[in-house]
Amino acid sequence: MILAANFKSNLNRAKAHTYIEALEAFCTQNAIEDRVIVFPPASALRESSLHVKVGAQNAFAARSGAFTGELAQDQLDEFAIRTVLIGHSERRHVIGETQELIAEKFAYYQKQGFEIVYCIGEPLEVREEGNEALLEYLEAQYEGVDLHYSGLVIAYEPVWAIGTGLTPTLQEIELIHASIKERTSRPLLYGGSVKAENAREILALEHVEGVLVGSGALDVRDFCSMIADAKSLHVQKEKHRS
Ligand code: 13P
Image (cartoon, rainbow, N blue to C red; front, side, top):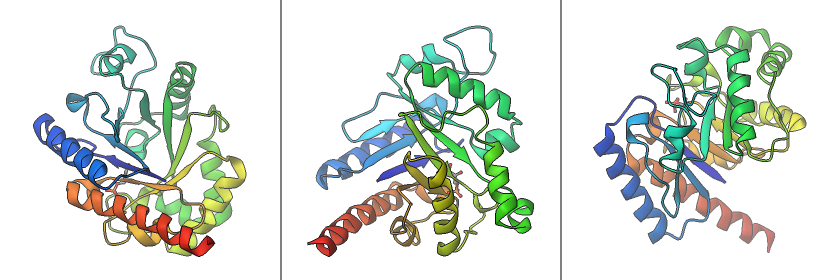
């Protein structure tokens, strides 16, 4: 499974580094084999450690240049960053990134062989229109995106569930994930109000291959508890098989 924490614009450099060090220690002590990724703010980027991969929340589609306020590949290379988040709903809806710009970033970082965690998700008014409208909306977010790229990880994050404490029902998550899985075989994460309290039941769902967590992961103990849940689910599944 993949357990990913997106810090967004939270935690400063010192706090993010303390967090990552505590996370690394937890993963070592517990022999964690699942993939653990953190996306700290740009000012706290650093190299990945043994268990904790560090990714960028955003990057401009260029090696370097006149792109005021943006990080480009040169700045990621400094920390050997090879994972980037693209298409996050806050970049789409708060910052105003268009699908065209997102696809440009995707193509650029695919060409460079980066792992891309690509976010998709619908706003509430689309969800209220029903499943057909929802899937159509997601379809438009695949435009210009290579769904078969070997470095791709998809994160389904309903916009209305992000930071609101609301989540779709478990059945709804399963249903949408099954539909997304018909379009791509790449790993599929769920995101949107995942917390230490509900991570286990979400991780146990079919077609959920991990979680992308925002506010619920800001305390490292909570994120570690989700990682422990993922590990115990493997053990349970193994027992079930034998
Ligand atoms: P919350 O977990 O705070 O809802 O945020 C989810 C998210 O946007 C992760 O990228």
